[in-house]
Length: 347
Image (cartoon, rainbow, N blue to C red; front, top):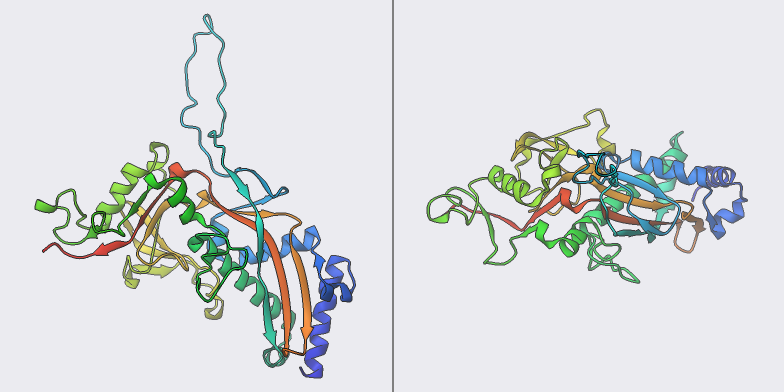
């Protein structure tokens, strides 16, 4: 690391120490991030990702507790003959015994001296360093939420390249907790075929002529009547579902170098009457029907831990960050997953 770079780095560490009311030595030894800078850090993580801004972000004090996001009671309107009985109230939220459990997830990174020397030339050195960390955390949160299937004591990124073993995500919870809301075409007898002639003639009821028919069928049969006509329902599609020509970037004002951390790409056409969107790391041949605010990320407040270490043995700066988080679908009645979709015309 060049001396000029070291000066910039030391100023960065001093600023972090100042924000948290600690010494620069504490930054290297590890510290619990104070509530205000903790909130600001994760606000910036959310702001770096359009998708994370659209889904439901819930800050909770306790590690575990009842779900508190989207929930609609099925029936509350009524009439009562008060000459015969008293009026009775109904819980405004749907009764649900499910709980969240925020567990520690590590976001540990390093930056080489060589790269730091390159960045030190810019006047916004500290901001570049912070932005890189925030965007990387945002992308990893999305990856876990959409691909997590289990939680291992020690995760293995080599065999689980999409972070499948860090924290159980939305799709896996839907598969396990509400399999009746999942159409899985993984087996031959349950194959989900979309193509010319698949939904007509001898194939009537066995397949779908097009994606519109598939999404409409899933919405009508797997989504509760309370949500089926909700104008906020969307179809989140994998990259193999629609050709790229049907999609456009929602946020075109963003600089090309910034288009990394979870942008939403919106289709120019609807599927089955629903707005079709694409987000990073969603399974390639699947569709999730839901409201975006039905997908929640729970963050436990005052659980952010951090240590920033200058490690000359590795010629890098190491940044150890951990936060307790969980992923939850608030109301399964407002979610339907279609996966392992096959495109082929009938013989």
